[in-house]
Length: 336
Image 1 (cartoon, rainbow, N blue to C red):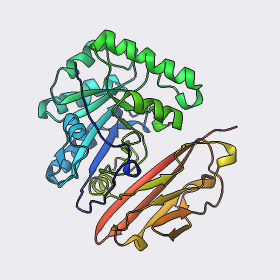
Image 2: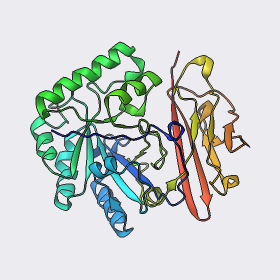
Image 3: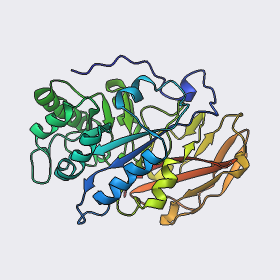
Image 4: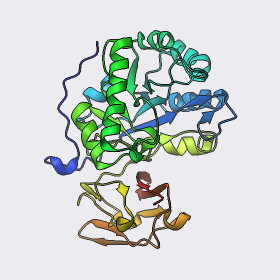
């Protein structure tokens, strides 16, 4: 049974926050399916995946063990780390990618939704337990149904998590303490509930993890056939964190009255070259350069239009004397 006792601050605004210019950060990459070309939005070809692993090795970046990621969260990273995550528990992962990771003992987190386990196209509990016995793997919690839980009532959301908890206990003997939001979507209620029951959680918005990131909305770079192209992957793993003190709004589930949101991000005064920052956002269903303004180290965006359902996104990058820093955020927009 895996038990962790960890005191890590929720985010920069909750503690005596400091800027760490030499924090090289943690780049977390997210995979789903392997060699399943029928599903290009969640698939990666295994020859490309092998190239990704080789690029990381050739770059002298360390594959980060999930336990070390947890225990060292509060420490700035003197050397960049790469954290591999696998979502959903598809059988193609077990058949195609797992043998490679196993042979090379490359650490990763496997996020499991409990309801589909054993169904066609998914791993069995025996296969999951085989993987879990390896000392370089951690199993993560990915809900029970993997439905659009943000569309459910708060009661239904909690019930879904509790169903998964029971099944994890029956099959693994413990409840995983790392969580991944299905589709990367979460409301303030969901995030608050997860923060009271887990020690870390991940979304699907892009960015580099640093000591000041909110540990219950950690960024990951989704990798698939479109966004797994080699040139892009080389760029991703060489990004650095763009640290900030505060980001608003806290609520990522936007109602009609709140769309577009009153968005701002406050950076540290120590961050240099902020005049070089560029942000892009997809309000109105079109990705364009955002209209930004700065005041007292706070960047705000004057959105051109409302965000369209289902997701609104903002990505910002900064050329900091040759180091490209990056962060992103995601909103969920209801259709009614």
